[in-house]
Image (tube, rainbow, N blue to C red; front, side, top):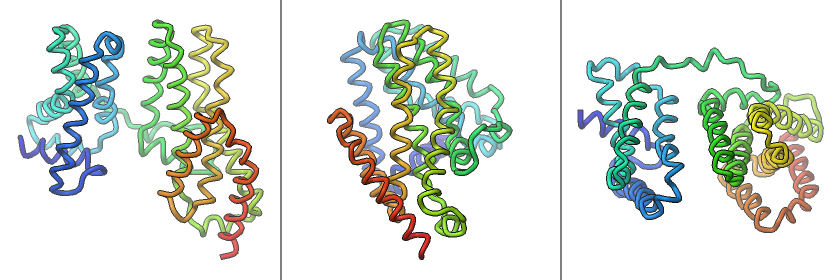
Length: 300
């Protein structure tokens, strides 16, 4: 069982650590304990948000693909339960030191229910996205992004209950990031070449696609805000659309290098936050560069 848990740990964090990289494993463990230490020292501030510390385990369980293989073991539920307890152990330790026994029992019971609950087949969900960019459908299915929305709605409820507007802005930030994910993917140069549209028209259709699809994912959040009569917060929903639209420009400017694309995009967004959007004045220049790059691709 210990060997299985060891492999499950490596599988979960395979994107962060390489084989036999024990230093990376130690750093991840220290990170978890560091977060737990921060929560412990500021427990009164974090007390109302303790359930959020266990969200990552829930999200991981809902998107994992190895459960059917684990079912070959008679004690697979015990293995899963033990694995999830290990992932959250630093946070259980905080609750134990704070004598929050009821919360510990509640979280453990919830994980038992989660492990025994039937799994949803997201392949049957028909997303309403515009198909000009197929990566919207692919991203939502691959990363199980639909599961984020109940969490966002719950976060809005927490924000309103505790009169914390910053949490609502956090929801907008997460929603905007979700809308950016499809643009981090790449269509092939052949797809761009065979498309009959000019570079300018192709880019405009990509922007239209992002605008329409982002609108679809904003609807449940906007309806939730309306339900709680947060009319003034609806004015800020427009912010959600800005990063995904900008990301389309950077996608084509740095079409040949995804790493540079991601770094430049993040720097641009962060700089705009600190400079109150001043860099948005350079959008016409960025738009022009994106068209030039598309023209280059089409002539190859």
